[in-house]
Image (tube, rainbow, N blue to C red):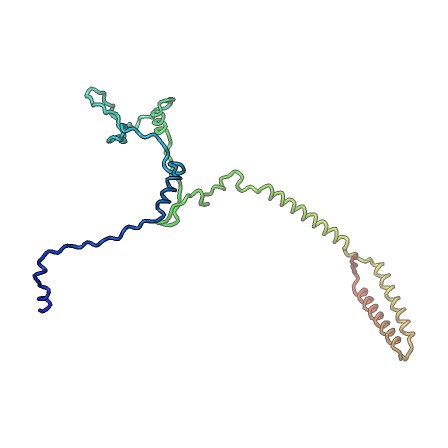
Length: 257
C-alpha cells in the first residue's frame, strides 16, 4: 500500500516535455577532399565499362495491346448457294479398285490409290520371355532358322574338303612308308640246306670248345684258369641251347636288321 500511495502524486498530472536524445556528429574522413579531387581528375566517361551508345528508340513505336498474338485469316461467311460435297458411300463387294491412274501433281489421288492397292503392313514378329515379361525382336534373337534356307546349307565347305584330301594323302604316304619299312625288316625263312649247314657249324664250334675244355689241367689253382674254365662252360651251354632249338624247330625265320 505504501508503494502505490507513493506513486500517486499531483505533480504527475502536469505535462512533461519530451527530451530528445542528441545525436553525435556524423563521421567524415579527413581524406575525403583528396579522394574527391583525384576522382574528378581521372574521370573518363564510358571508357572501359558501361552500356554501348545506341540509338534511342522512338516513343511512337511503343508496344501495343495484342500486338504479339497470331492473326487468323478473315473468315468467310457461309452461303446457302455453295455446292455441297458428294456423300461418301461404302464400296460394294463386287467393286474393284481403280487401277492404272497416273498423276504427277495430284498427290491426293496417288496416295489414295497406293493405300487402296497396297498390301497391309505386316506386324514385326516379336517374342516374350514370360507371360508378363518384356518384348524382344524375334529376328535378332537367334530363334529364327534363317541359315537352313540358304542355298549352300548342308554343303561341305571347300576348305574342309581340301583339308580332308590333304589328310588322306598324308595318311596314304604314311602307310606306304610303314609298309616299305616293314618289307625292309621282313623276316627271312631259312631253307633246309641253310638250316643243315648252320646246325653243322654249331656242332663243329661245340666240338672245338669241348676240345679246349678237355685240354684244361686237372687242378685249377689260379684265378685266370678258373675264369677261362667258366668262359668255356658258358660257350658250351649257349651252343648246346642253340643246337637244341634248331633241331627242335624245322621252320626258322631270321629278321633283317
